[in-house]
Amino acid sequence: MKQHFRFDFTFPRNYEVRVLEAAPPVHPVEKLYHFPAELEEGDRSGAYLRVSPKTGAAWAAFFALGFESDQVVSEVCSSPDPDSFCIVVGGYAYVVKAGDPANWFRVEQSPVVDLRVLSQHGLVLFAGFTSITAVGGSGILWTTERLTWEGLTITDIKGDKLHGHGWDALADKEVLFEVDLKTGKHTGGARP
Image (cartoon, rainbow, N blue to C red; front, top):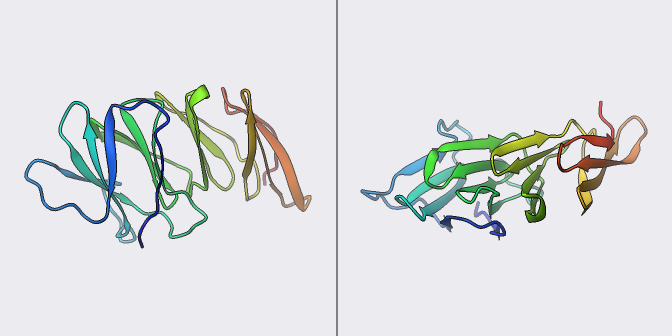
């Protein structure tokens, strides 16, 4: 399956990244990294990326695909840390230091169904089916508690508040929630 990526380089960055059409040829200098490092049997599909940090050697990477679906995110974006980038491949999100590919983490929203770059807040938001994770310049800042039984939708962001709605199975209706972007604390919503 060919991935169709969106790109958002709103945050300043100290690197260049390029999605490759296929596995890169064997190169005597550029190393190929795998994310996650230990691939499982199901991790045969994914995306290849070439990373060129402003200082240091260029390298290539394979990022395992989460899901083959148009309902999940596939995107490459800069992060609030100018030395790190974010890549989401079929809903699996990775944040990697461009100059040190051994320094990375996976955002535990599986899958990511909405990604928001909030430059005015210094955040990248990764929304899953039931909660939201915020990544800042120093890594993961917060993950909300469960906001919904299933089917989270972000409707708008005003000031330091994110508004959305999700499914309340007990009431059999959509309910509103609000998340404080500074703390990840929320009001409203529903959860089992």
